[in-house]
Image (cartoon, one colour):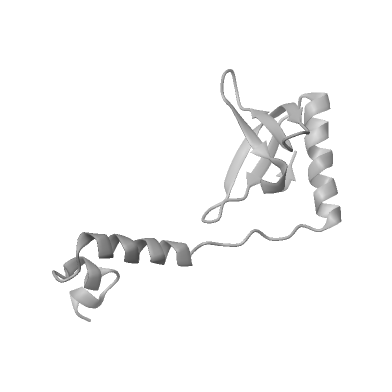
Length: 111
């Protein structure tokens, strides 16, 4: 197979495509890889909430998977604060290292 036809070689080697079009095509290709967030059933949601509450009360580490449209993010830490108004938890991963995580973005939780 020709080098130009392999992978993204057609777009990379073409002198006709202006940079703005190339960027638009690459952006479109990236958007095609976007995933939808899976729906969690009531039991799974309850287990996630229970694990977060246990981490908050006992100050034990918890590992959460945060949904991202392209690649999930795994974080480990202790739940130190719960903001019910914004539906977020503060996950501390050390001194001065924390993240606010939305409850709706949390996937399976492991203690």
